[in-house]
Amino acid sequence: MKENLDFKLCGESSAVLFYNNMACLHLAMGKPTLASSCLQRALRANKSALESMQVKDTDPLSSQPLYTLGGNKHNELMYSLGVTLLYAGKASKAFDCFTEVAQRVHNNPKLLLRMAECCIYNHKYSNEIDFDISKRRKDLVQKIIGSGIHRKIILATSLSKDVRYYSEGLSYAIPQPTLEFGYLCLKNALLLLPNNNEPNVPVTTMANSVPLSLTSGHNLGIQHAALISRATTIESFNLKISILTASAYVSLCLGDYILSLEHAKTLLSFNKLPGAYKMLGNLYAAESLIFMDKISEALEYLKLENLQDLNIFISVPEVQEKDKEKADEVMLKSIKAWYPTTVSTGTAVLRYNLAVAYAIRGELDKSGEILKQIWISKEPDCDIPIQVIMLALYIELQLGHADISKINNKTTLSTISLAQSGCIKIYQLWCINI
Image 1: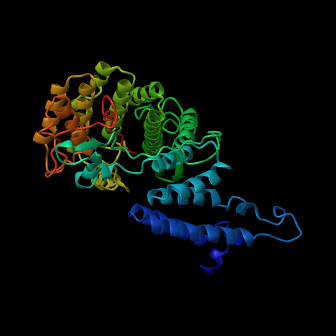
Image 2: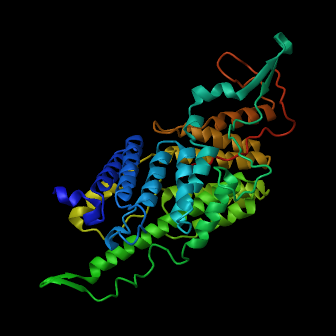
């Protein structure tokens, strides 16, 4: 009704609620740009509602009804706006939104994770381009010198185009979308999380409470209360494994391999770990060990049996049978897909890293056999990263098979001059954004 639209009477702005709910719907449908537009309207409506309560020349609190004091939803809306901007690929703008919220809400681990995700996105926003061999093939060759029999093809020393953000002369604590600041955010987020948040933690708080009598014959029983508490426990668990995974990745990028290995081992210590996080934990642990020259230990984390699925969450198990299928359908649909999306592609990534480990140890024949298995066992839904071709080239050249190594169908490597002495920089393992 018209009288219920007044913020002075109800303490809630219906315009704010409307635009907020529309934003939630658009984001759930995979339209983050429309969602951010709705949230900006909600912020304007929230500002107008607050301005309607201001009285000149008097204390605002003395003339403001008590039930309107909590009506300011600026921080909640600004956080949601940051989430939608992050999903829309505008990490820098999202970071600014989160920074504003952090000035008032500084002890929220989820907010700190979102800020760190902005830093990670600025560092590397996607891996999908590296699986497009037709586009990345030209990046294999740095330049061609000479002509005829004296022609030399100089291979690229690295295929990685990651931009590293260094803040020379500035403190890491200054809010900016860098990996260094993201590391601090993740460190604080871990400190704010409880220690006992495995998904099978016994429910105590709400499950053991006395049922609340609503009306005669209607009780909010223990089972329903336990479901709410278990959902909260699982959300906390999902949050913790996300923070640990991001911490391992950021530490790895910053060169802190000991800390990265520690985070990866902590992640893998959980029993009910989703498949995607298990894959990332094994990859990050293996890469950390390789950089520490512990190849034999790294091989233990690169076993194919470590990859069973690519699930990214733990769902609430206590769902009624009639609603289970619908709940699974809703929860399994991610707002934004991550890469790789298939188990076969993930298996190829694991095999590639295994081949890298053997190549660094000097077992080039075994490394080459593993690379052959990638192509032989390639399924239709399997994508191969360009790094596989780079490693195959390196192995053939080291074995003296320059006539076999080809950059493309028209160019044969008769004489190769590496731009950098020693091993080509192919040991940077594959890292996947969360």
